[in-house]
Amino acid sequence: MFHKYASPRVFFPRTINEVLEMTETESDAVFWAGGTSLSRFSEHKAVINLPKVVISLGLVEELVKASRSEHSLDIGAMMTLDRLASLGRSTLPAGLYEAITRIGNRPLRCRATIGGHLALQDRLGDLRPLLQLLETKIEIRYLRERRGRRKPVSTIRKFPIALLEENPGLSKGELITRISIPTENWNIGVYKKIVPAADTDRKLIFTALARIEKDVLTEWRMAFSDGRTGVLRDRELEVDMAGRPLPLNHRELESIDEAIDVMTAPWEKRTYERETAKSLARGFLNHAGG
Image 1 (cartoon, rainbow, N blue to C red):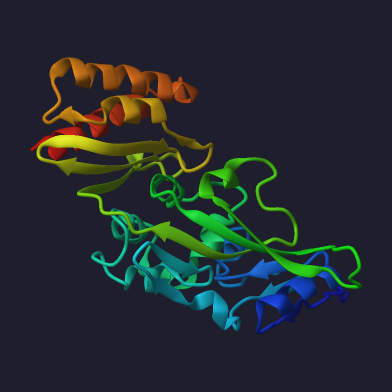
Image 2 (cartoon, helix red, strand yellow; image 1 turned 60 degrees about the horizontal axis):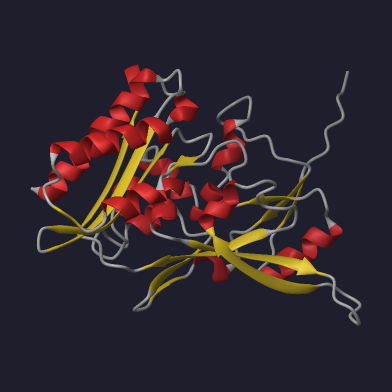
């Protein structure tokens, strides 16, 4: 008996406009960046189960460019994580080099793209907490109907990366084209990923930034994540502790512990993660004060 098998149709546009026009005629199309997400859901690791219609972004040169100005680092969505890391620790914003190199192994980072990483639907991805602290902005392109025009026109919108967590997140036909990270100077940038008891289904991501002037914590930011359910951050705590002399005293550290208990309330039954979060925060602040 022969089984009917319909080969997927794969398109290779060369410009962003061509990509968007294809989404109009191919409503069920799936964007292909590095393919790492699609391969996770394939039955056999050697063969990727492709959707019926695929729009490959590999030939869109505009999506692989990066530029740095006095105010920001602008990164095309198709830049691979490995290529992004190759820009170097001194070029990348604080903590980002360490965060990238902790993701998977190098073969995976050579395929995975920054845009694909941020577009994940079933989880947040490891970079989101740090990129939120860095006040990263996302550029999205999509087609929009306009009065008096026969065809929809390409439209750009930019928004803080934190809004990707909101529902519905990315809408169908929207394409992440670029991310923009402010190039502020931070004295310390820390990224740590801990997997409790080698359980790959559980992890704790801790990331923090600090700016210090004359032994004073002039500004700091801190966030936790389990990589799935959201980024935990307390902006009021950050504001309250800014301007404190370093090292922080015992009472100040205790108040941070109390704030983390409140911040990590969604992890009520994850005692290990909650206690580790407090330890990581203290370690970061003690290092900043050292």
